[in-house]
Length: 117
Image (cartoon, rainbow, N blue to C red):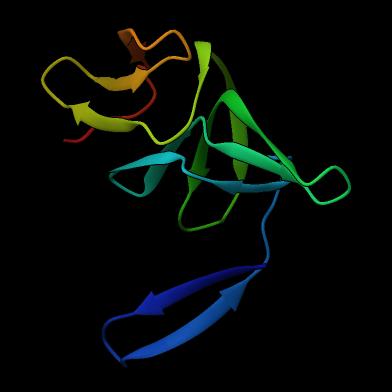
């Protein structure tokens, strides 16, 4: 179930997701909005049975009009608590994160199907 806020009438609504969705309860992920789509990267997946969180490396896109999710692939390494920005001039998402080895790394995700213009 997805919740959304509609600024016009100042109300909250609900809608159902379509397609395959990121599994588990995710937190500490990065989202950038591009037009009517959002790119979602990484995050922590929580397992209630083991009470452990696992960093993820998935890259997803969700259509805000239909709430349909599509998995685009993976980042080169799992990340959580990271940041991201969309570079519209070069049509790419730039993700930066600190890895387990305390080294900062950057991953550039290019996706030609999304455009800020």
